Amino acid sequence: MKTLLLTGASRGVGFEICKQAAAAGHRVIALSRNITPLNGIQNIHPFAVDLSIESAVVNFVEEIKTSFKSIDVLINNAGSLINKPFLEISSSEFEEVYKVNVFAVATLTRLLLPIINIKGHILNITSMGGVQGSAKFPGLSAYSSSKGALVILTELLAEEFKESGPSFNALALGAVQTEMLEEAFPGYQAPLSAAQMADYIIGFALKGHQFYNGKVLPISSSTP
Image 1: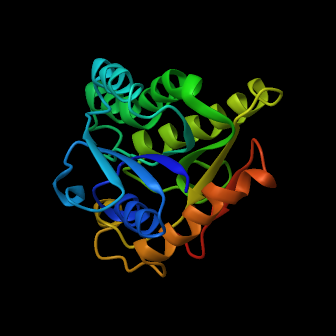
Image 2: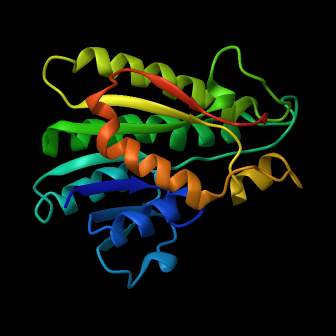
Image 3: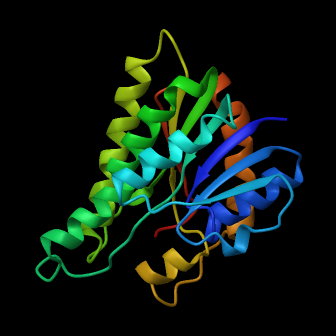
């Protein structure tokens, strides 16, 4: 049994990761602003946390340190998306996306590192839209650029901790049938379900760091 901590746990791929990992017997610490869908599921420990508020992240870490002495896998899955033309998006909206997709990842990772297994795995869920050279789409300037920042952060942290551990990798997801995909591409039907992608991510989170460190792997069978 491993202890996994996952953000963005109440819907889409994150919710499926929680359910599947818990069903396999792993202990799942699940973070989301809305934890109602997670309540009552065996092996899932839900925490209501707004990742856009740094003090909420700090308070959460202080709260769990007494109950969870070691974490084997951290999956930074939460994502904020605004689909709006660049000339119409405000600075505050741009910043809100970065607060969740970049700043919260950095803060949560930094605060949790003392209790993360040095042979463990920190897995950042990014997007094909944040990978250089991939297809880009109008209206996603804040989202895709923030996911690009997460790609570089992953590479940097892998280098900084390569001697001591843990390992850092990122999966750049393509189209998966989720609520977020509908927000970005209304009406588009993805080739993969959230459950299928969750199954892949769990396997990679538990074993991928035996083969990779500091890598950003595209997981996409379609464009978008």
